[in-house]
Amino acid sequence: MIELKNLTAGYKGQAIVTNISFIAYPNELTGLLGVNGAGKTTLLKTMSGLIPPIHGKCFISGKNIYHMSEKQRSQCLSFMPQRSSIIYDIPVIDVVLMGITPHLRFLETPSKKHRLLALHVLAQFNLSAFAHRSFLTLSEGQKQLVVIARNLLQNASVMLFDEPDSALDFKNRHWILNHIRELIVKSNRSGLITLHNPNDALNYCHRIIILNEGKIFHSFQPHIISVEELKETFTAIYGKITVIKHQGQWMIGRLFDESRV
Amino acid sequence: MTTKKDDEQKLFFKNPIKQYIILITLGVVVFIISISSGKFPITLTDILRILTGQPMDSLTRLVFLNLRLPRVLMTLLSGIGLSLAGSVYQTIFKNPLATPDLIGVASGANLGAAIAIIFFAGNTLSLTLSAFIGGFIAVMMALSLTQLSRDKSMTHFILAGIVISSLTQGVIMLLKYFADPEHQLAAMEFWAMGSFAHITQAKLFSMLPFFLIGIMFLFLLRWPIRLLSLSDEEAQSLGIPVVWVRYAIIFSATLVVASIVSLTGLIAFIGLIAPHISRMLTRKNDTHTFIISGLIGGVLLMSADTLARTLTVSELPISILTTFIGAPYLAYLMISLKPNDY
Image (tube, rainbow over all chains, first blue to last red; front, top):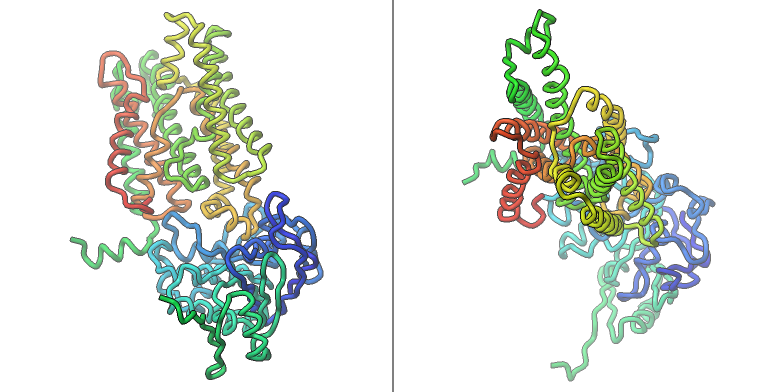
């Protein structure tokens, strides 16, 4: 479980999100939704300790993460960036193996046992055949899955994902989001994901927090919210929309003016 | 046309045992050629006699043990050290054009040498010591500058290196302006072209501790070095205190590079091209790639120094040869490589 208390975050003392408080529960994927510039990524990076907070606290299992060292923090919290920054040819197995780093002693290098663990995690994602391939030769979807496998090896109780679908096509996007949801539910972890597509947030997240102009605009659980309330909330953010619930799934569409060319 | 097998070889990694065997064999061959070439004739039979303790004339023995052997060993160690440091820098700065002198070690050492030439008559001890200290101070100044700036990202490390290098170049130009053109200016220019001509057994032993400590630290830091090939954010989220680990790596690499250039002067290009060749051979970037880069550098520099000693009547400065090998190779890389093909 990760809990935010009155967190204000931004760059160089300039606040982008102010006074944010919420809890992301275990076994749940919590979605952070908002338009570009709403402060989703800033909030996520501050929660993961990558940006120092301006004000406020962030607790994991009762401990303030801002009082932890990088190593302690990475043992209880993993972060997945929008895209991996790898530029050299690195074998997939080694990319996954990097996830064991928070559990290594000072100057220790991964052992054969760690390598086997990494192979085991790759097998869970049906990626065993790629273990000795260069990470750079994989498709964008496969790359993201490898990074998720790395995060799984990190074995943190809280997993943060920063728009992991942003570079993916339709098919891969759903494939990756499905993997993330399944992972969170099955492994008793708390997941927090930033997304920009409300349809994905509604269909993959157990709880949604909408950020608007640096503040929490609304938070709700998609499986119990009414069509009217959802429509009202999203209209305020995205403009004229329509909401349909089909076979238990939410679908949101933008409504255009009749005068549209 | 590439076959399916070729494609598979491109995609899958193997342990580079073949590359190790080839390079070590090549290294031994070049070492033997290098050790038996030079102005003072020493044949292989002479070397074998000296090494097995058989009677040999004292001049040959002296030249071999005190000059020839230390010189060839120094070229080998310099190639290994500069290329290994280059490989490490290209990894941690996520820049395939990074060189071991990116943070100012070479220009600092150059200034140190220039000061020794002007103010301490340029005797061997003062030159070596001053160059070593100069290289180290320059790097420490660049790191302090980064520490003072708010942004401690990789770009700021490079910027700090540029600031310090420019500053030292300015001082060097000032010293050159006031230098006696016949002796001091010539000595400064020669130092900057690099040479193994003055390596002796005593000098080799004096650099060894610094070199070995630096290499040992780099070896111990091999896993964090690989993690720093990720973005700072990714490395930090995996528990690496990025800024401090980067300081530790730069400090270790500086020990290696400063221990070399303080004795040899500047050696161009080796630290840039050997890591490239290594990545092309291993098709990956891991600890094996760093070691293989070192071996390639060793072989290349031993070959270059053998040529420097034998091509002309008087000996050529080493950087002339390494530049003639390095620049065309870089041009080849520029033309042939695709984006992201490092």
